[in-house]
Image (cartoon, one colour):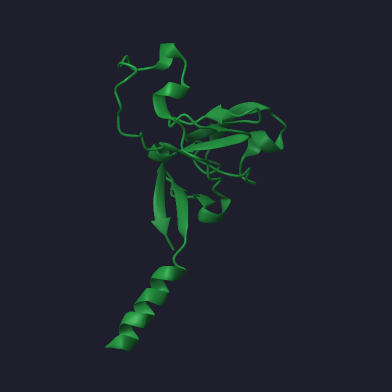
Length: 129
């Protein structure tokens, strides 16, 4: 019985997270290419025009990041062509997956990431292989 539980834990540890385009299922990023960032202070980091209107003293739950930031990858054609800022499209189906900016972008959690190669989680499927 112990031998089977040990082999199951080994299989789980070997799984790698990959991200696929939701439309055509092409692999667009993997766990190794993700650039981690420290969580920002939420709405406090945004200009007052972009805030929701809650009072300054009110504490809300920290928002989950709706995007992942990755290293520049070979499939990102505008990056290879030398653009400074552009949208990122899937190389297979041309669906818009995100955008990039060498000067940086602000995540919805409030943190600044630069250079920023942002992929929206709503356009991606998380898979384990």
